[in-house]
Image 1 (cartoon, rainbow, N blue to C red):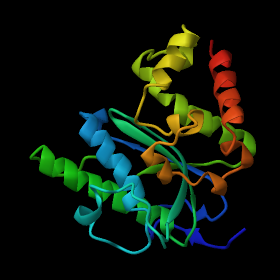
Image 2 (spheres, rainbow, N blue to C red; image 1 turned 180 degrees about the horizontal axis):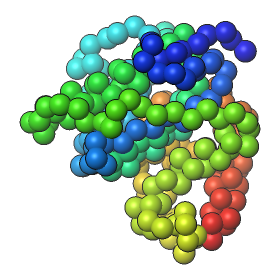
Image 3 (cartoon, one colour; image 1 turned 60 degrees about the vertical axis):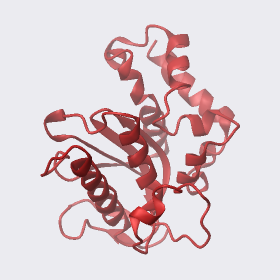
Length: 226
């Protein structure tokens, strides 16, 4: 394991260690919406790629052709999964450099707030404080987080599915197969989306690489909650 640590630049108490996996999440102030339309979702998704870079670059010069392959990138973190919801987001990452998690999240959140405030002619904070994190301290918990993040959008069609179980498995799978604002489609589809370049599956356990294993994990959790 690499010996690089991220103590949040003296702001956060948690330490992020290279080779370990973390669930990063945050939501809007007072649970307010942070994504109102497709443009908002896609802008945040683009930031996950553009700003995952050690060297600071001009955002406005890259944002339009963001998913064109770039040589010699030096990413701050490896992203294994993400899901965006109307008032919050989830990201599964592993750091690749010292202090890289805090730097990456600061860049992404600041970049999105600047975009959001300009678009909606507002000022001030958007998110509910600093980002939150969970350490995937075991492989079992990592698998849980992997499925949890990808199933999170199910709340949009069945808000009580976690407490009462999934009512209609077929409807749930059909919804997930049409939801654009998570990495779910990058695991179930053979045809790569442009935004699949955001993910670095090789930085995660082998089951992140297998379409078959991914579907089995998702179905296991869906059936467990049925």
